[in-house]
Structures are given as C-alpha cells and as structure tokens.
Amino acid sequence: MRVLLTNDDGWDAEGFHVLQRIAAQLSDDVWICAPEQEQSGASRGVTLANPLRVRRFGPQAWAVSGTPTDCVLLAVNDLMEQRPDLILSGVNRGQNLGEDVTLSGTVAGALQGMALGIPSIALSQAMMVYPERRADLFAPAEAFGAGIVSRLIEAGWASNVVMNVNFPDLPPELVKEVEVTTQGFRDVHHMHAERRTDLRGRDYYWMGFRGKLSNPQEGTDLRAVYEGRISVTPLHIDMTHMPSVHDLKGVLGGAPPKGPREGAAG
Image 1 (cartoon, rainbow, N blue to C red):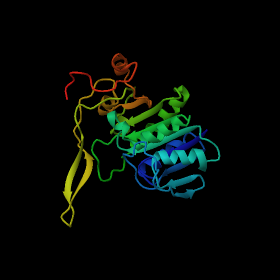
Image 2 (image 1 turned 180 degrees about the horizontal axis):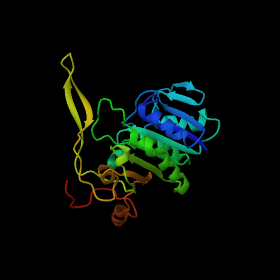
Image 3 (image 1 turned 180 degrees about the vertical axis):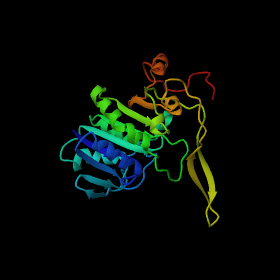
Image 4 (image 1 turned 90 degrees about the vertical axis):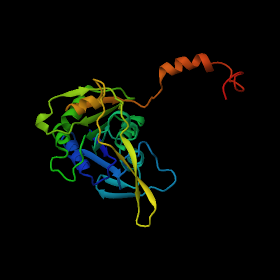
C-alpha cells in the first residue's frame, strides 16, 4: 500500500513525525509532501497568485511553499511516481471538531485527496490546554493511530467521504472507547481577535480561540472528545441544506423575478 502524508503544521512539526511513525506501522511505501511553513486555518486554500516552490528533503519527501491542498495536488499529479492508495493528514496539534473542520488545513488535505479519488483520513490530537512543552503531547494519537487507521481501511468507506479522527487529551491508559460521531456545532463563540499595539504605537490583531468548552449534543464529535473518547466522523463536501432547497423551490422555481415584489419592505 502506497501512503501519502501531509499536514498543516509544517513538514517538521512534532505531530507530523508522529504521523510518520503511524504510517510506518501500516506500510513500507510512505511518501511525504507537507507545507514548508505552518498553514493552520488555511482550509482548502489553493495558491494561485504566487509560484509554488518545492524543496526535496528526502528520497520520497518534499516541502512546499503552499497549503495542504497545494501539497496533495502537487504530490499526486506531479511529484509521485504513482498515485497513492491512501492519504493521511495530520497529526494536527489541536482538535478539529464541530464547525472548525471548515477552517482546518488538516481536514482540507484529506478532502483534496478524496476529490482526487483517493481514500483519505485526517487525524488530530486534542489539546484543551496548550502547554509550552509536554513529553506526552501526542501520546494518544501515537498509541491508537495505527490501529484506528488499520480498522478503517479494513472496513472501507464511501468514495465521497473523508474520515476525521480526533484523539482526546488524556493519557492513553484512560482512553477507553472509540465513538463514531456526527459533526457538532458549538453553542458558544470561541474565536476572537485580540487587539495589541506594536512598538511604533500602531494597532494589530492576533486571532485566537477562547478555552471555554461548549455544551454539545450527545453523539457529536465535540461531546465524544470532551468526555475522553476517540471521535471518528465521516465527512463530505456537500454542504447543501436540503430542507431549504425544498422550501425555496416554491418561492424561486420557474421564471426569474424581474424586480422587487409590490408592497415589499425596502
């Protein structure tokens, strides 16, 4: 089995080394194509306005001056001798849960693999509190990653789906269960911009996340990880809201309207 690895934290990130060790338990044909610099929050961004630079740092390993999506596109279409059988993206430093999956470069790398017809899995290590340095930071992902991926490969999944795996922030011996979940949605807003002032007296902003936990529904990725379970969520790209499609057909079906309706507020 030929496996391609990517991430959004950069080619030399600690979690990416964990992913390489996970992949080595699954295959002896592992390829790497990851961003030169951190691309967290890049989502499915593609570099269109600048050239992409590629640096080879191993026999089957490249660093790219772009996003995870760029990396997968270049690896599959140009850099690799043959298409991979599996793409693994991660292991991200921090959880990718709920609405955050639409921001995640880790999930985006897997989504691009799926778009190219390759089974793909995103893996993230939850960190509810971000320590400066901790020896066991990725211990749950390291302990259970290969087993989860192996079981998913054995089971298989639909060609228009990616698997989003999140490991809880617990010592491995306290992780007792795996739960197949749905994508949740937080009932609190946890992203914010902090205004600061530089040494010349000018304002700038630093985007970040508040550590406050939400109260998610049972069965969601958020609830599973909050309660110490490994979350496995099948995701797909189609974001169509079908009830709204049904409702709007009665309003906008047929010939296009030519102007505001008489008596409409304005």
